[in-house]
Image (cartoon, rainbow, N blue to C red; front, side):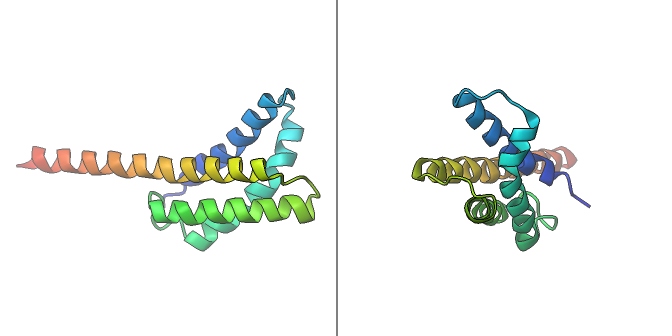
Length: 125
């Protein structure tokens, strides 16, 4: 069963938080990083379930669903459950980062698989 994909999606969320904290001059205290990442990680797990990502981890469409649920769900949780800010620039950066990376790594993985498969087929002839 292909379950490795969740590690890459988790890294997308955590890297966003680490880079954001660093750009604002905060030290990368892992407790604070986890606190900021938590609403997005919770939403990510819901997105993975909705997209049934374990069935086709490299589906770009699945990545798009996961990114959308992660962004929307994470921002809603951040604002209404964690009582934290959702400034418009934060919303735009979050949407851009999550979508670019969650869809992007899947496109690269699919391309690598396609190239590997076609090379394997040409070697068999």
